[in-house]
Amino acid sequence: MRGTVADESGAVPSLREVLLAEKVIRRYLQPTPLVSSRRLSREIGAEVRVKLENLNPTNSFKVRGGIYLMSVLAGSGVRGVVTASMGNHAQSIAYAGSLFGVPVKVVMPGWVSRVKVEAVEELGAEVILKGQYYDQSAEYAEELAKELGYRYVHAIEERLLHVGVATMHLEVLRELPEVEVVINPIGGGTGAIGAVAVYKNAVPDVRIYGVQAAGADAFYRSFKTGELVDLHGVNTRAEGLAVARSYPTPLRALRGRLEDVVVVTDEEMEEAMRKLYASIRQVSEHAGAAATAAAYKIKDRIQGKRVVLMLTGGNVAPEEFARVLSSG
Image (cartoon, rainbow, N blue to C red; front, side):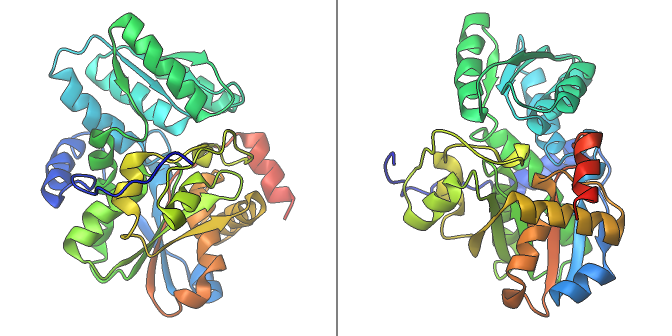
């Protein structure tokens, strides 16, 4: 435990900020589909739609934050950017750096899948493998940025990322203004902060649920206690959720605004990966399927509601996806 966070001022972006970010992002990205599924709706007992953020250029919602952040930094004369990531944030920053001509170095944990490392390198960024989980990589990245005179971008605390990724929820609200429940995975919390920024500012009665991996549930513990938590390690195959500690900004932004945080196991996420492929033929990584796994787990609480599940990413190694599909 590392203390209590009480001050919530400024933790949640305004709707005006998100609308302005949308104007920038729309130059580079088209809205992702929001698709309905009869099978998921029948099995969960609700009117279910899935937001396909896996169809973005980097196969993840995080590219939204990267583009908006880099659009701001590029105009400030930044020399370069250093960040840390398990993969999807790395691809986001690398992709945006290539768009705006900004050099990017990414520090990644040594166990991250080769498919994600190669994807980052193909986008022109330099990858440095350091640490066993995100938080160790982030510490090294921050020091490296100081040495190089680059701008350090924190994957979780950086406000410009929160504003950019919130645009996915703005798209949901435009297409489905009658939405009643939104379920969003939480690694560090950027996507969930985006949900709060949009729904709680525009339609406060929307219920927002977060989802964490059972082997990386620091934010869940913080959500329940109000204290910052450091697990000093993670145990999950969900790379996008493998964050070992909670951070001040997400805790201030989300505690008291989320309906609840649901904890799911790797096995439950893998079952959800199979269900997403069987029902809407979409490829999801573990973290990307977390919202679907949570919907099955809390279906008694969302019966009959208009529910949106955020499929946040599809960056999974082919052999891993094949293993998941064949093990059901």
